[in-house]
Length: 365
Image 1 (spheres, rainbow, N blue to C red):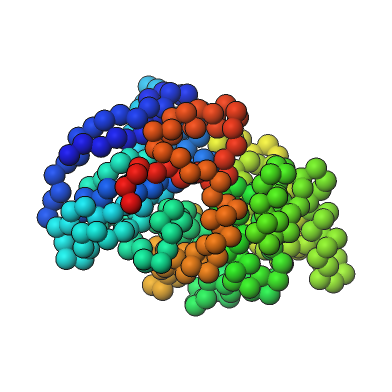
Image 2: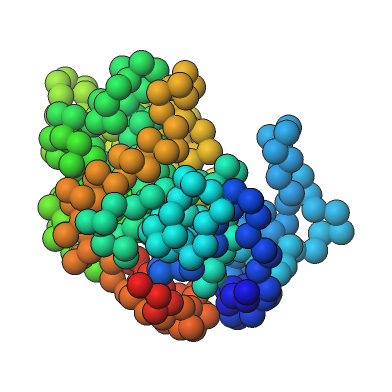
């Protein structure tokens, strides 16, 4: 069997290529893609050429990035994206039946041979819109993991509820992209007293307002806004929790300034630039702040026995069942065939077009 796969051949050059698929091994699955979602913040770094992994190799064992021998960037990028919904066309395991709809993370391709013992493959319920299913395997768990870090920070590693870090609290989300808005709506769904979203783009702030969130423009000072709106007591102002979801160091600086004294900033962002805007000798130091990196590959220390990626996906499914209607209406802004993906990525990289959450379809239901 052959498939079409989206490949970044070089900076600015994205193409669909036809390639062979391996045979389905014992225990494996052949997935035919129904929909595949775009994570623009990460994927455009490959298109533009500024993803750190293009120039430095990650030594997973040592946890270090090192300069790539020879210095040549790592093109072509043959696996782009991590938000897929596929239908099982062939199964060689009793764990999945042919015809099952599943979420997985294998890139923008029309088909994939999956090994469910080594890959995250999540069965999707019949009552979930397959287009929303693109959030289940990876991007939804990213958001849920950020909230899990907030919960563990608030009550410790024994936290049993995802909402323990946000329930009844005032939350600021910096960045109204896909991750930011999903995380913000998830926090509101889990009982936050108020969720405000700061962003410079009025189109994204309009979406935030339509989703029931409090929009905060960046043309003022979001930190002054947060500390004026949320007074806890003398010399105690600001957000109980800040979720930093934009991969710009200026956004991290805003997040640190907006947190109340001894508050926590949970950082879900991916940065590709130096940290010149972050001044650790100011609010971070004088207000005794805590900065936590929430990365999908790691749940908070001590929580792994109760929380894992499968549970975070299950939380995402429950969230989408409760909030899927508004998300489908307001967040999922672009649905187009996979054949249009190269043009869309080129337009987004050149800022000729804006897409908050785009999903590519293959015509397979």
